[in-house]
Image (tube, rainbow, N blue to C red; front, side):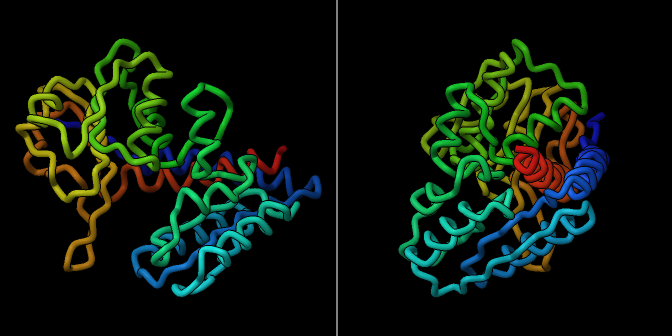
Length: 279
């Protein structure tokens, strides 16, 4: 029997805590504000930004969407990030992807003040995370850990396999798992016999961005599988990086798509914003 590791209830609890903190901050004269910088016409990106703005509004956080247009130059994007970093009324900054041709995410994210870098995009934030120093972790990577904790998955001494090595999810998730005393293996496109490695995992994190890549052959019995993938389908739906139908009945637990990692990620972005506003 495979348990469904929902993130909906966890996200609701985080949002309730955020709403209480935001109310206290506003009453004290520091209303928390989040700024999302957008330079794309991508509809899936627009949907995600709208979901962040709605969630922020419901928790009492002001959210400004700064739409620079899909033709924005790297210089224009950098100038906006620098200005927002210097604005004392702004407490959280997100640089949304994709970016226009010629714009390098890591280069531009370096312009975000680490104290306001609520999605852990600045390379300084990632470096501090790797060194075990205080920093905002990328919210999606942190959501993986929050989900595992909320469903009582033991991590100390467990073998965790992360499929994907992006700086947004794979690498930071690996560092967070290491901080919890898991033994971590990171797999990627050059990994030989992926299934042979992933089958040894107690905890398997799929964060590669390839729809339904992970099937029953990749999953050991009684493993816990966290599906980070959000891949659009032609009919407007979403599927994960895990073939849920294939894995169900073999894994001990599996996060759904949607309703797993996604809502927790959004809730953590808001939590990071009130943390930044507290100073």
